[in-house]
Image (cartoon, rainbow, N blue to C red):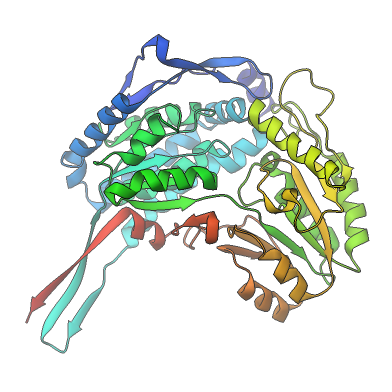
Amino acid sequence: MQAARDRINTTKSIDCRHFINGEFLDPDQSRTFDNINPATEEILGWVAEGGKEEVNQAVSAARHALKGPWKSFTDNERSAVLRRIGDLILEKKEELTMLETLDTGKPFSLALEMDIKRSAHNFHFFADYITTLGNESFNQNNIALHYSIRRPVGVVGMINPWNLPLLLLTWKLAPCLAAGNTAVMKPAELTPMTATKLMEICKEAGVPDGVINLVHGYGVNSAGAALSEHPDVDAITFTGETKTGTAIMKAAAPTLKKISFELGGKNPNIVFADSNLDEVIETTLKSSFMNQGEVCLCGSRIYVQEGLYDEFLEKMVARTKKLKVGNPFDSETEVGAVIGKEHYKKVMSYIDLAKEEGAKILTGGRRAGQFDKGFFIEPTIIAGVTRESRCVREEIFGPVVTVMPFETEEEVLEHANDTHYGLGATIWTNDLRRAHRVASKIEAGIIWVNTWYLRDLRTPFGGMKHSGIGREGGSHSFEFYSELSNVTIKL
């Protein structure tokens, strides 16, 4: 693996073209922008800047492909294509991991295990799942037979984020294709490379021309807006911040598109005094700082019951100080660079705000000093905050967590639910009854007990309140990516 990494460090990145109707298009060079490596601030290459014209071309190709050979594919034939895509992702995992690491600044080892291998699993899972689906049938007192028909929803627009670029794209694309739809994708402008490479993989796997299309570009008043409002797009799925979700929802409303949103999170991590502290610390390090804290499911609000609070802080701070921030291609690196200059400024502004509000920075709070270039932030733990603090209430989306004490179960539930967000939550306790009781009262779409980030793709995933609309995973994905018709036959 180390030899592979030595090769990867010398591998050139790729320029990112639009992919429409089975072909990569050479853009007008006056309509491109630079792709920046967040760990070095070097230019990786250029990215085509698409807009309304390119979106129109892509949607037209996707609409036409709905009536082409793809329409006649059986479930087993679509399953075989999906499985081949997953296989090819694994065959090309070194190159894909390199591209993801260069684009995002995350550690190579994390990109390989979390982003690339799980992307392949998304296709393998839905390749299997599609062959198990059935439809409802009811005999109404021997008077009539009712049965359902599931058909594709049509052309699906996919707008994807920069934190887990390939993983979250494949999480949407795999069930979309399994259900027989066509797609137009807009990856985040900051992380375009693995999406571009995926188009090559899908073509090699046998996806017919026009079934998948990729338009690069920006969101507001550009490609993202054109895709959201397009009258020939039947559904929009989006992962990203809540404010952007609101804008997409407004753009999609006039044409009554189906929407599925996974939005922001400010997730509580609740530690009761009867917990196994060593286990809590190791998992909380991950839920706080994995992927530089740029995960919507990170437990950024940590609540620790009095009696364990001081010992938790002592051990958590000590372990956090040992985390290695560094070169993403170094095998010992645990925390890489945040995504870019503007996001770096945003995260640092919250740390400054916490200081102004009188909070205590127990560790971190600074630029990682050994780097002249790149957007590296030390993992940061903040204490002495109140529930009204902006650092507690607003999504920072970086390697920054707040830690607050609590006394009673009722108190921590009030604090945990005092937020506009409702994506995830973690509960630590060895009291089985308490675990069930607290889990039933947490206002979140996914709740972990004595673990974090453990997923079964058959289960529902999504948020409530300002954290999203709808659920995906297993049958829930097919509820979104297909339309049901009921057929009634009189006997």
